[in-house]
Each structure stands twice: as structure tokens, then as C-alpha cells.
Image (tube, rainbow over all chains, first blue to last red; front, top):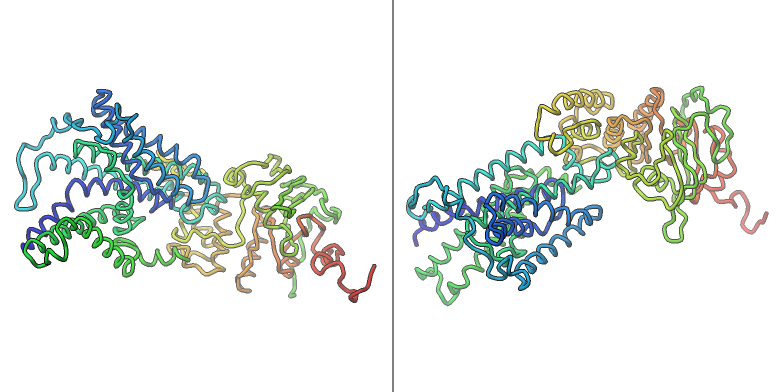
Length: 330
Length: 284
């Protein structure tokens, strides 16, 4: 057992590109769920249209990469309007049902045969982000030490992704502390009260859905350019639930909640994975008890158990305020 | 009942005490407003005028349609039919937030304090003309800072007036039931209304706080505000209102100055049943 290796694996994941990408998508979800009280169960759908917006524009239509980014954002706005206009006047549950369905519909449409000339079907698209790597200022090579090392490409994406996370947090700070944010939070607390004070609740919900959706799409685009691949089944509903997990873990309705949540989520996930593999490898856990192929599933079970403990002992999340949560229940 | 204030010399003196009576200066006028829930006629008001600058009490037994009428007039529920205007502008079919912006602001029977906003934020939320409530403007602090400062001054004055200044930075959720009623009234006033509609403002409030709430309401009237309020406590109704409207089974069945309403036959019948005062089995 090499605890340094296990810790190294964990830290590597905690600061890696995935953690930043999930943090970005979860910041969008925080806008929806944490601040506006919108139950969006289809955040992965926004990630998907963002990712495919870039991939399809570049691969199928030979557009430049920056144009692909604009396409991704435009698609996210369109998706938010499409989902929001019919459902946001209704009770919160309708948005939840609609968004989870929409995410799945998108995935099936993008992987379908008839769409495959454009989307690549089940195989998806690859190698559309070369221009981004061509301008990578980090010299080729491997950086870091031991387990904690990254390739120049990963490092480049990490710089971009964490910068975007920082920008998104600054944006959230400004907008939530503004009068706009005050209205948004009042909509979360009591829409009738907001309405009685002359606030257009529907309009504010729609704006929130668009803004959070664009942040989700940005996460999706980053994931696409980082892996240089889009594949429809990577955008299944489970991703949305991971985002909820880490958002609640970090603290919903807190500016840094999704960031802290994502870092911890990825650390625990990879730490558990590395630990289990080593424990089986060294015979600490007999192979008859846990088969190495089952590690992938068991680590998620551990994350689930950890989340349950958190809900019991710290239901407000790492950064949350317990007093606020208790008041919210009244 | 203790010494009640003498009703102000009002222009309501010459108004006929009958349902649908015309007022000298009505700010709110409703015609043929109806709402049914299934087969139940919740509201069928053929004519109602509310006098400007007066306190009008809306009374009636449970299920008379008072709250439903409130909901219809303020856009929180859709009327089946009818017309109503506020300050001469037709309000029928307008969404709630648009009606509120015209200066007709309501409160709720069950207080809707915005729990996780502070008391100060609750008040600041209600103010109008804050361009920082628009998305793109919100990101540029200098564009709305001056307005925010003037709103905050106004909010602080309001907090002092309603003795809520001690609670300024607390979450509204920590307030007592009575304080929430005060907060809701103060918040409604921050929206600079010309008329406020209060749905049972004293329900669940202790007697001392009730007195202070009623003084606030009278003071507002003296400043020129129009007030329409639903109330079950007859002492309160008799004590502060200038005019009383009684509803039963969705209709306005009686109107008049508070002194006359207690002896009104239709009102007594509505509250006690048409057969009161007679022995069982006795017929007309």
C-alpha cells in the first residue's frame, strides 16, 4: 500500500480539468437550483448542446473553433427558451419533468442514425479542437512530480478551465449581490410575494434558466475540447445527478459551493478508486471479496454513502449555513 | 370596546348605505366580477366602488369570497368575467406584477415574508425604478449604486417607522408572526402604492401589536392612502374603518358606515342565518 500514490491520485483529480469542468456546469446549476429554486434535472442537456455545438460546427461545417463556441452558446440559449417558455409559468415539478426528458431526447436524437451524417451517431466526433492545442503556450512535456503530474495539453486546458471557473464565480458574485440577484432570490423564497411587489417572476426565471444553461454549455464545450471527442452516451442523466451531488456537497446557494463541491467530489471519487485498487492488489482486501472490475461501481457506492453521512450530519453542505437551512424549512 | 376614534369627517357622509353604492371619488371600481370553482359561485360582485383616501373594511362570514375577490382584483387569480379599473385604468386580465406596478399593492392572509432575505433586503426588494434589477445593468455597479443608496435610506426610514430597525440585518424568517405582518405592510409601502389591500392584517397578531398596526393603518389613511382590508374582528372593523362592505356567498350584500352596518338586517342574517331569533319550526 502506497498512501502517497493514493493521495497523489486524489489530488490530481481534485485540481484536474474534469473538476474544473464539473465546477463550471455546477455553477450554472447553482444559478438554477441554489438561487432561483428551479429544479433543472437536465443540466447535462445544456452540456450536450454546448459540446456538440463546437464539434459539429468545426467537423461537419468546417467552421473555425471560435464560431463553434458561439454556436454552442446560441444553442444553450435556444434550449433554455424552448424548455422555459412552456413550463416556467407552471409549478416547479413541471420543469423538473421536462428537463430530464429533454436531456434524454437530445441524447437519443444526437446518437440516432438519421442524425449521424451531422453528429457522427453513436461514435460521435473527434479531433475538432486542434487549433486550440496549436496555440498552447505550455511547452511539450510532463509537469509535476510522482502521481501529481500533468501533460502540457492537460495543463493548458486546466489553465483555461480554472480561469473560466474564476470568471464564472466573479460573475455570480456580482450578479447575486446586485438588485437582480435580490429579485432572483425572492422568486426562490416566494413567487407570490415577488409578484405582489411588481416583479415579473416568469421573466426572471427565464433569465436564470438561460444564464445557468449557458454556463452548463460552457462546461460541455470544455469537456469536448479537453477530450477532443464528443460521444452522445457520455451525456447521460447521471451527469446531472453528479452535478447535484457536488453542488449539495459544497453548499447550494453559495458562490463557491459548486467549486468546493467539485474538488471534493473528484478527490473522493479517485481516492476511493485508487485505494480500492491498491488494497486489492496488495491483498489487503481479498480478490474473492471485491473483484477489480467492480471497483468502478463500488467507489460510487462509497461516494453515495459519504453523501448520506453529509446529509445526516451537515445537510447544508460544506459551505452552507445551518441556520439558513433551518429557516428555509419553516 | 374601548373609546373608539371618531371617524374622520369624510366625503362618504352622503353616500347611500346600499350594495354597489356610488362614491364621490372612487379609486377602484369593479363591475360584474365573477369566479366559479366547479359549481360554486365564489365571487359574483355586480358593482363595487372603493372611495379614495378612506379605510374600507371588507367583512363577511367564512367562504364569502373576500380573499377570492382580492385575488381576482390583484391578478393572482383569473376572473371568469367582469371589468374593473384602478384609477381609471382597466385592470382586467393584467398579470399580478403589472397590477402591482400601477400602485395597487396587496398583502396576504398568510404572511409571505421572504425568509432567507434580510429584513432590509425585503424592503429594498419592493422599491421601484431600480435599474439594477435588469440583468445587464446589474453587472455594472455604478449604474445602480446611487439609486440603491436612496432606496436604502427610504427603507431605513420605513424600518424606524415600524419599529423593525433592530431587526434590520436579520433574516426575515427569524421574525415573530406579528413582526412579519408589520414587515409585510412596510414592504408593501416601499412599492409606493396609492392603494393597499390587506388580507386579514391582524390575524395571529398579539393585542399590543394589533393596536400599533391599526395606528399605522390610520396614519396611512391620514396621509392620503386608500386602504381596503379584510377583517374578522368586529372591534377592529368598527374602530378604524370609514366604510364597511359585507360579502356573503360571493355577493356584496350590504355597504355602509360602520355604525350602521351592525344593525343591517342582511349582515346579521349572513352571519347568524336568516332564521335566527326564532324558535325552531316557526315560519315567516
